[in-house]
Length: 371
Image 1 (cartoon, rainbow, N blue to C red):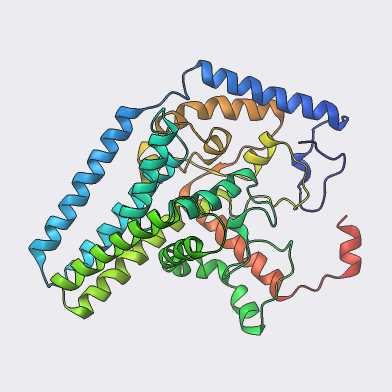
Image 2 (cartoon, helix red, strand yellow):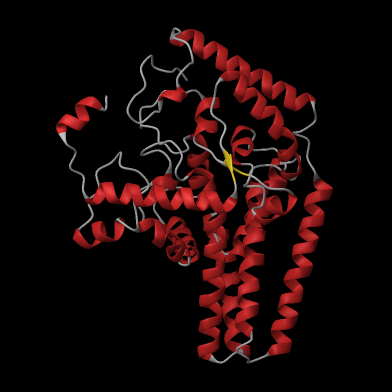
């Protein structure tokens, strides 16, 4: 997609070509350079499937998950079950990472095998609609951090940008000034949002693939899960177990996804930035070794994941050097930072956005010299 000759206010100058050039030349250069990078990656075998890795990961998660339920039955009606609930939230999140990778065709060579693996993990294990997640996540990958295109930056409890005027009331604007500090407390409720939005998506009007199958699978999952808790635990403890499990799941999920794009450049709805530039400059990698990759389900290599969404997790670290060198050669900003530092960046960004939304007045003279 072509770049305009002059950057818009929502597209930083570093996203533009380092030297003035006609848009047509820029298209050819960047598009062909990405095609060359893709060819190099493919010839290096970095897009080949890693079935043994994922089968081992699935086996480990299944064994750990089974062990958690064994401990659950041994403890019985004890408040120590809240620790089991927290552990369950972690395991459910790790299963969600695996389902995410299957949905991206990273696990099996067969598209059908990947989709059904992702659908069964999402509905029966995690408690989310695969159709809902696919629709939302596909739109995010196509237009990351793009106003009115990326659902992950849509205005809601948190304001992620100021490209669209906020319609919040006085209380909302007051809270928005400190919304960065409220991010992680709000993530404790993310699990509920994902469960509820999944059901709303399945019950909406319009075509939904395997609608009734997913409703049945979700009903089976929640029915068995809640029924088992109330069968073994007292009502108060069963409710507390659910609250803790869903809170840990939401915090872990949100804490893994938040550093990837929040605080990175926001693109206007009509932005004409090419694919390579768009995917790289709106994404942030998280530095760290194999433990960070395991902890975040490969989402720490967000730039590589967006450039090669079907690349298996084990190859992301290896392709990182190729991508970084390619971006350096093209003059495209490649962002990587530590996990804790990324959280600090996100918090500062959200506070700044919230403060601007609370006081949207802009001095005309300052605006004149900001051009």
